[in-house]
Length: 160
Image: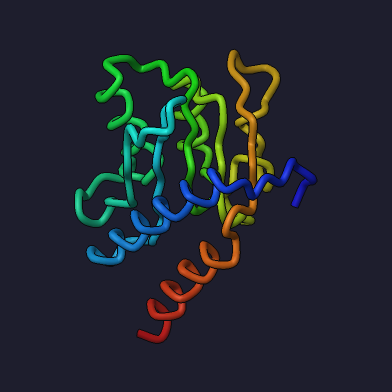
């Protein structure tokens, strides 16, 4: 994976704890366990989401999109200036696009997604200089736990 700033700060770790808790909620509906939280500049959690594609029958019901929608509702604006998105898996192209459109300045993520990641592995939408907003990326926070949650899920799906 590309060299990016690695910041396993206590705040990043705490936010990832919340994202991991959210990811486990996706397991209740047999969805891929990805969780996300949007945290405001004051540290308050403004939005929480987990994959709900199966539960909602909605292909756009990714953890990041749901957390961003909730945060925008809490703030009363679509601009999430000063916020941080923490997510257990590197955002896909759709979610990275939502981050850019919502003007989220920072993304903290756990596991890399070598098949569909759009924060530095397959694509780098979050730091694409041709777009009108760029996002600071902090990968690898609680990476072993985030990756293990996904690996366990897919093993059970295959051998279930």
